[in-house]
Amino acid sequence: MRACTLIRPLGQSSKRRALHTSSIRMDEESLRLKDLYAKFQDPTSHYHIPPGTNGPEHEEDHSTNYDPRQLSRSSPPRNSSHRSPSNRPSSARLGVPETRPSIQWSEPSSSSGSGGSPTGSGKRSTPNDRSWLDERSGNKKAALAYFREQGYDTAGVLTWPVAWGDCDTYRHVNNVRFLEWIQSARIRYAESWASEMPEGYIAKMTAGKGTGFILKDVSIKYVAPVNYPDTVMVTNQIHAINPEKASYGHKHLVWSLRDERVAAVCDSTIVMYDYDNLKKGTMSDEFRKMLENIVDSYGQ
Image (cartoon, rainbow, N blue to C red; front, side, top):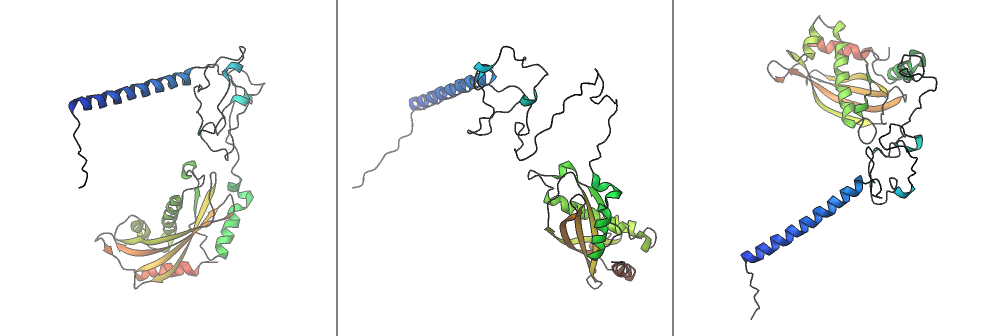
């Protein structure tokens, strides 16, 4: 004979006892948290977190610990705007990894008067810290020379500044941003064809009217990271013109002007598309000849 275990439903009294016990536990937890919050706000407590600062990031982080008994009576009040250089927050205290440079805090010049600028000049200027944009640096000429040597076009090149917001948590430009640059470069390159075609022809194509072009596929190889600040140049190369399939290949090089190197290589397939009827288009002889002439001009 097998032993059977009977499962009996809880009675009303048992339910009330369970709820009462749970309520007591919640009350104890609330009191414990309330006491802990009070310690965070108490300047004499080891748990105190001064306003405007962060607590420890993990259990082994003791960078924010201090002994309140060592506070001098001569110390400036906490609401004072004065901070000594050693007490000023570093990038790590603001939640930024220590691998990044700490924030540099500049001291006001002793010659500056009340209401004047720290330098006493009375005016500010934009720092000249983008040397790669200076024509005398030769960075752009070196990039164009490389494009020419590699068989890419030196006309219709997109030059684009890297925005601070382009970077992600890994401290370099996000991979998706490269494809956005390439998309803009493709349209910019098409705009450079305007002088090779009848007036308004290219403008109509890029506006999605009549027969234009559309991206079929794209592949990209990331060669080197791009960081802020920088400026990229994106060049173009047409290849694999196929009138029967109404398609052609479009390559790109993404060049870092600051680092003077290739950051990415991209290739894509472009097909003709009838935007009025929303179907695959045909490649006209006029458009095909223009593409062939452009390819013949590479390296010249």
